[in-house]
Length: 330
Ligand SMILES: NC(=O)c1ccc[n+]([C@@H]2O[C@H](COP(=O)([O-])OP(=O)(O)OC[C@H]3O[C@@H](n4cnc5c(N)ncnc54)[C@H](O)[C@@H]3O)[C@@H](O)[C@H]2O)c1
Image (spheres, helix red, strand yellow):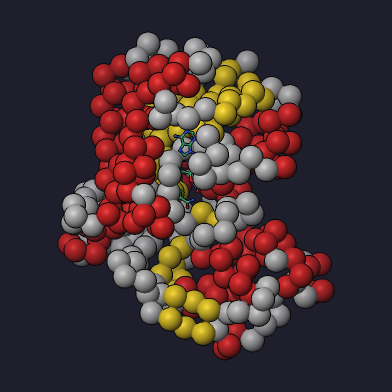
């Protein structure tokens, strides 16, 4: 039986990924988190009690904690990071620290021996946001886009800088040690248990109190439901064609935040024209849409969830009382 480690397993993607891998039943799972952002909640407690699962409450920035982790691992999905826009501005040092040190320590411990089958690293479109905004790089954006930050004095880019560093680090360490790697750039994954800071839960939670407000309503994104993101992650982590590759994972339907808000209002049986609109927060990225051609070509991935189906699941989790009888039955 192989051994798979998921770091950031108490977080959003890590949790759902670990659940899916556990269900498959063909590997022992090592879950790692320090709960700096993810929750040690009932769902995580349930997951860690399941067969073939071992959970480690471990700060990956602490070398002594990392030393206590089991020695042999076949695959690592390195999802741990301190993200969240507020953190980029208020805690840039911690963002840089947890965006760099864990990757070094994990590579030192597990990749140096050359025995690992795959190191999968979670990157981000923030790493190329400046290239699109400042240098007019084409949208939809593919994986060949140069990575850059346009202002080293702007703390917003602490996260992007750490993730750019992470990509370069993983590529060079894994090549040097002879370990296959894959880098995933996730784009706007959404679904249940994603915290309350992202646009979907934030909008739904406020809608429970009859507040319908949107900031940056003209900005565009493409959303991917978590189950599809997990499927794409596992395909990328296991397919031979994705070894040594950077792969975008994201949706392909570009829509404005207003269109997204209107969809949520309609599903919740509210008047879509009643949303109060505010301008974009300073420094927000106006347009983001990944090219997902490479993911499809290399792995055969096809999304299974429509936007509405995914939003309904999010409403069921965050604000079930908003669902009309018709929508609830769908
Ligand atoms: N969700 C998205 O759409 C998206 C988009 C782009 C990139 N990503 C990247 O994908 C990965 C997963 O994203 P997510 O949305 O699940 O994030 P998340 O914040 O929900 O989960 C990250 C987890 O890492 C843990 N963590 C942070 N520092 C740690 C440390 N030092 N030691 C141990 N655990 C630590 C946190 O407690 C948290 O549970 C992250 O690396 C993120 O940067 C996600």
